[in-house]
Length: 130
Image: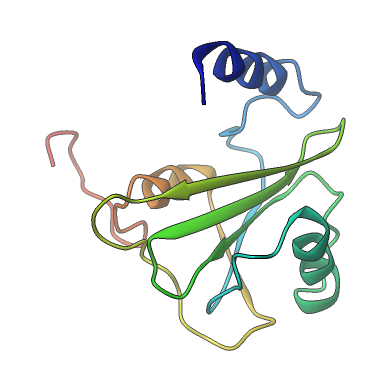
């Protein structure tokens, strides 16, 4: 992503009626198990609605992981439209809950930050030097 496009994305997230992407009051759900990463915005929104029993338009963040564990997608409605963010780790795997499809785990925005950095969000380090 070029710098102009990155700046535009950050500005859009700041001006959103929901605030920044890491706002502490948000609900974050991560789908247990694995998800087919060929799915796009509409198919993932349908999975949220039918599979997880949640409203994809409620302003919550929904996370999905692929089978290998190095790629996640986050689905988020920012008040203007649906956004789909993708992150791939260059080394290692994302720590993800196991379980059947149709289940989700609620985590905090801080835990989402750890998860996206490849840190074990279930047991984060106590100091900033770790």
